Length: 637
Image (tube, rainbow, N blue to C red):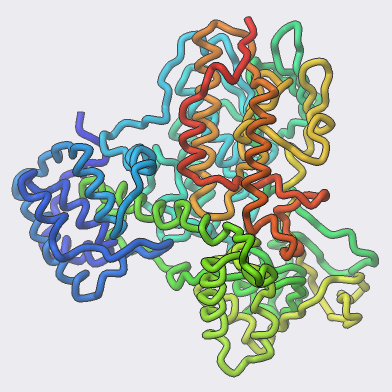
């Protein structure tokens, strides 16, 4: 059977192929050509003068000069046509040495040896999904309940079903996708390039934009759900309120909001972190329409209206430019400015050649995914590391962080010539990367420069019938009030009450500091697996889908141990969680996210601790979750 990534035959003419190649990432194209070439010619391609100069987040052309890109496409055209004339032979496999050389070529430097196995698994050049377990003996006797059918819940359901576990999925919404089902506000789009922001085993060739908008993302998750037959296992429109471990029966009993109960041996919480709206408790009352961005009122016509938007983090940053040319006036009330990462291609359309190449050119899509991943894989960790000897901690936390500050500041100020009033408002006064860094192509500052848009650096003191009074005492008239105030990421598993062994309530067990081994397993709560749990959110790169695939793989490793032992329960040892949590806290203390100079940081809980983020390198987390150690768990029979 032919490798699914090795390219399907095509009948396009030379002119048509050349037009398609113009849309492509040249580094990924050249690596595809290595696969197409005769084995004896592969080294010559990799060691030629046409090569990437480096790799960086959202840089798809490897910093190659235009003339080199043009020459590379001309060379690639001849190799593609030659492969066509030879009848599209399936490429011969590359050995380990050549794979390492190809990775180094792709990034214009050296890929560290610890990264090679992870990136090789991501590339999937053998066409095999190494993260799938296949059918597990004994799985059929361990029914699983998955709470949530967002990105991670759908992933868990797919893997459980593949392994032979009976499944039922509980989803509070009327469809899958989680955040991409709920957030329909104007301008909603992903901030990780789509050819990586998708399941590793379900790459997509249909994306119309490199950073897709909400409708396309929602459609992707719906399509994946139907393809894998998960829809017939989902109870939509039902919310889980309570989950209780029955010690005698070794079963979880889950009570739903309609009064019914679901029973299973395995419980998977995939309720997410960013889906419970955070609406500040502000005194007063506003008489007009008021809504949170995640509950957007499409029945409210904003044309010509005076709109006040409170908050301008990741959501407001997207929504404000999308409505600025429709409203009569837009007042954005924002407590602190946000750092922006230059991404001129953030709204770029995907040319038709990209989908064609993913379908027809050997491994093009896999190498393009590699480039996106590598550019954001652990690169941000260096900028997040705190150097205790660095003196100006209030503005930057290290020399690298200061360089990043300069780059970000130049990007912002360069868009505001003649607008010193805005410069004072939009350049943050805290260390860069300390809060969520936003992707910017100029649309945010472009909106703020409009005559009908005003940015107010303040908080909200109270509401009045016809508007908002800010913390400086200024009244802002409004016909419509929009809360762009984010979510409650530190309220894990909300609104569920989870009761484990000996009647212990999970939230009481956690207190103010949620903790789990690798963010997934908790002592005293057998057969419970948390996805997107404490210490798993990403702030320095990667993709939350990649993180979820790591977590689900760990879950499946635990369940494989349980099934093969014909056990009834599996539970992480308390000392394992304590040791991991101590390491996590120590590592977090060395990161900018825990800096005392970061104010209004949603990463922090009420106690001032950062408990939601993963401070470790992705390659380390991948390795830790890849192989589950039986010694860390107790299996009950």
